[in-house]
Image (tube, rainbow over all chains, first blue to last red; front, top):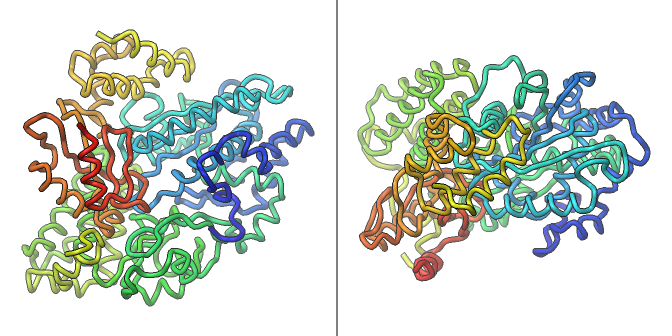
Length: 437
Length: 157
């Protein structure tokens, strides 16, 4: 955690997630201020715009702008939905936010409901983190008992009800329209856009969906002001951000640092390279982001703009670190299998293309690659990208392109020599699983 | 076919959604029933459909789409190991190999005594805790080195 971290500040001991502890840390002050002073909803949206808070789920869309899309005068139900269906390989920040600070998310969602005139909200929580789902339900009960949720919140005219909905193992439900389908009790298959959820969302009603970390940032912005939040980061990239660091580091975990922090500082926070080994490459924004080799990533700062300029994306802030013991072909094989397995099957280019990508990378890894395979991989990615309803197709294609761009020689070595450039025992030692081996 | 207790729990889920949207509770309902019975047979899927006023096929679609539902019997303890890249870098695949060797089964197989089923899982959103495994969909086990795996297997009686 950085010195400026406010989302994970609470991560001190098991009880810290409770309502009483959250209130002690200044929790629900923003909500109280809003309802007691009758702050006009448009002022809240204006404050968010000032903060330059950008969606923390991966797309980085400006939150204030998103909220302003909701039709204010729409008669009837409107919904606020939180996307805690965190399953992008490398990302595990929402789990820690909900584990240590569920009320911060709840408060952010209530404020969202107030600002957009919604009376109901759902938090969709990844099915695999069952204990976190149960904890969130308990936190909701606490909030209801304290009149922070339900009818006439804190004695005001504003009412808002919030519920938790769990997933059950489908990566695609992290896509916002698939997530809505899933809440409606169907297969999680993405919808065509437009119409966007702000006009046709949950049950066909106007809906705004934000990531867990985005909602968790809202109370701080209301308390301290949008400008201060912006100052925490850098222009156009407001605030602090949680980075999930995994892979070959000494201390994997979540680190909350200001936007624009140089990458080597984050690597140092994560304890540096495991065993003092040499850094080979980093996937900076979740498995869909193109990999960047050491010499490029070490020069990057951690914000949407810097990483984009380097040819990748900040995405969800999931930093996967790979050292010199990593076989890049095997690494890509793992990722390609994932997208093949998780494609929902709706669009032909993705359904067939992800299988194709996996099978070709698999045969290269297993010594059966053909010289023309690298061109074939590129051509398959071209035929997936931009031709599918949702971004999963692109997400499957981008890592392939990134790996081929920066580590082509390793793929060629595999094809020519029918084996890894990195010896098997070196790879085995790299994982740290076999301590004595 | 649904037990009283299951029905009670399902109805609590139904209450989370607008009155005309009972179908929204189907994922929770299937999870509740699976926890009670171990897996989802066609008969129980039909019972859930009847309870929620859905077509059985619509419930089956959901049960077959999400990969934590089991449409065939599994062992008393289903262990799902994440082998995705971030976990693999910290021993996820090696942990799975270790389990396969200890239990004498491969992925999607069950031990002869019906105690363990092994599954390969995709990202569980806990990559910092690798190697990670999930027991019976509800218990997440972190930092699973050989000693921790041995202990876990010992606890699962």
